[in-house]
Length: 90
Image 1 (cartoon, one colour):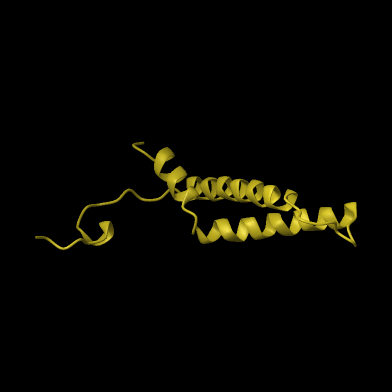
Image 2: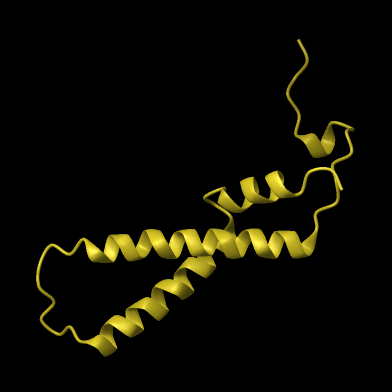
């Protein structure tokens, strides 16, 4: 039985990644993560004592920044799937 090896070391040439597609895929993942975080924020279990529209705006900006950082790490796999789907044969 042959041992499993990663695609990069198996001798099969993988297509060169397109940097623009990679950036777009990460941006799409960030949008998905922002939506998920917004849904989580809506599920409040109690009243916010210090809540205001300014606080909500800053939370949204902070959530967007966190979503961008999380998407750049590519841990969720959404960007990888988008890149694989759209990066097919050129």
